[in-house]
Amino acid sequence: GAVVSQHPSWVICKSGTSVKIECRSLDFQATTMFWYRQFPKQSLMLMATSNEGSKATYEQGVEKDKFLINHASLTLSTLTVTSAHPEDSSFYICSASSQPHRRRGKAQTNEKLFFGSGTQLSVL
Amino acid sequence: GENVEQHPSTLSVQEGDSAVIKCTYSDSASNYFPWYKQELGKRPQLIIDIRSNVGEKKDQRIAVTLNKTAKHFSLHITETQPEDSAVYFCAASIWETSYDKVIFGPGTSLSVIP
Image 1: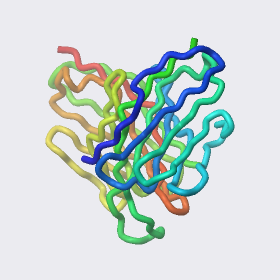
Image 2: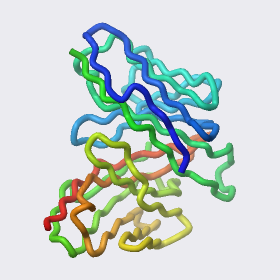
Image 3: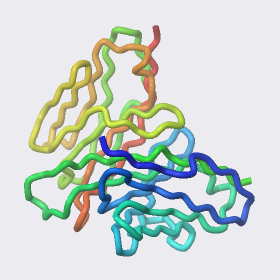
């Protein structure tokens, strides 16, 4: 399958600092990238969806000023956790989709998501 | 929005037995249902998926069934092995203007006892 690279794998930072996480699609163009957060023993919760060249769409309850997302190219999306606090400690994971734009009802294309390896963030 | 429920939350089976995980979804517009296996600290791995125009799909020891009318779908693992122990997530994909958004169920922790 396609390869998605995510860095860093883990980061420890002091409370109040900002942390940037990168997600790169290495062998395909990702029209859409998704950012998920996963607390221990819980599910993957979708935080936001980013489309190249446009503003990210945030899920309800996710602060857009807290979690800045930039999708500047078809191969790179970044998530910046601003002014991180201990409650932001979590496993953050991106996924990328290469499906072309289609309208509802059209023949389905490959809808598989390709996940990055995740970033374990620990805020002290 | 889409809501995916999953049961049971934990499941223990003896090696060689079958394991069944069931999910329901709320949005009838969902049309793609992947299942993921996740080991601790690792990325989710797609193990099988099914589209809404298919009722059943099988891949060796793994099978998935879909009942669109009831909005139910299930994962069946036969002849379980210890290496099947992991957390399994069902998911449902719904079209959002220009992309498919995938919503995950809460997960099932499967333990296969040797």
